[in-house]
Image (cartoon, rainbow, N blue to C red; front, side):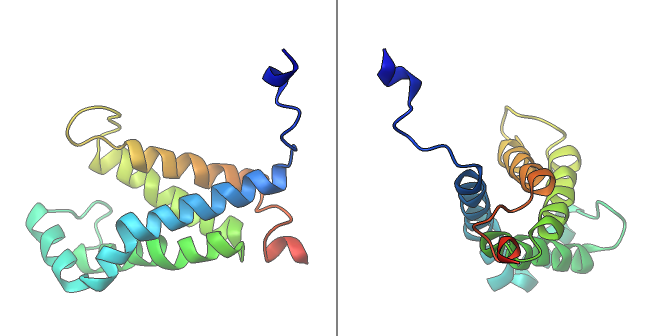
Amino acid sequence: MKFLNLKFIPQSSDLALLLVRVLAGFGLIYAHGWKKLTNFSGTIEQWTQWGLNLIGIGAHASVTLVVFTEVVCSLLLIVGLKARFAALVIGISMAVAFLLVHKAALTGDNNGELAFLYLVAALAVLFAGPGKLSVDGRK
């Protein structure tokens, strides 16, 4: 029964925060941000066709903010540089995506499950900080 206690696995909140930062940041860049960045004008056209003007600033400004969030802020999150700021920006963007684009749906064809999970990861880093295994943690 001692095996079930998992005491052989070291407990480290810093390692856990590193894993959250790196995996969430990499996933956000790889699955979402990089495609938008490399096809920036096509993404603007697509959002214009879909009528995505969620916060009333137009498709071009919206895509610019989302690319900044999903690429730049994700990179900051991964290395842990200004990580709480990056987590705040990612959290706001994911909350908008989850609530307005996906209509807070966790099931169905247009579910926002990934946006919700990225939001949870961003909130964890926002409130816990990036941990000692980060650029911010070395100060």
